[in-house]
Amino acid sequence: MGLTIHYSWQLAASRAEEIPALLDKISTAAKQLGFVEVLPSRHLHGAECDPDRADSERTRETLLLNGAGASELFVVETLPGHGCEAANFGFKREPEGRWIWRSFCKTQFAARQEHGGQINFLRSHTRLCKMLDAIRELGIDVEVHDDTDYFATRNNAALREAIDAALLVQMMLG
Image 1: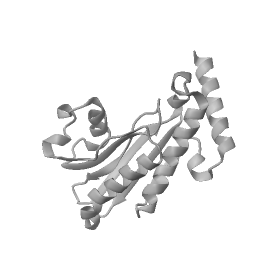
Image 2: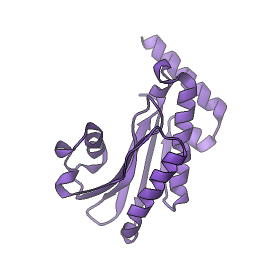
Image 3: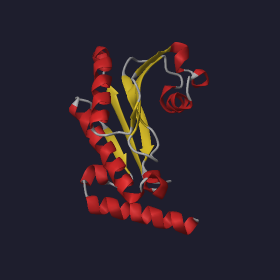
């Protein structure tokens, strides 16, 4: 539970040769949007896609979410803001040849005082939405479910209300 943005997309097998360039553009966009961390893009093959062989905990989490059972995976691991979960972007090859991605990023934790409070949450959440817009601009049909509905409405007041309500629930639960 928490304020989370879920996102997914598909890319036709015929566009596979574009993937490295698309990842470069995604990395550049994340940096321009001010993501606090953007790791170099990675291309994993075969056994490298095994979560138990991951070279970092972050890559292991990415593989568990998206790469388990994949024979090939392209990924850019990012962090939209302090306190957020990772927001990773990439392409996993499916057996039938198409490329897919499904992921999510919980932004609610960015509202904790030690990470910058509500302003940090607002920046982080809207930054991730702008990133998903940038991916759409690359000709990728991104499907988004935003627990706050901000992605669909771009309503700043409603986004503030959503974090206020989430923080109130968090306080009541202790």
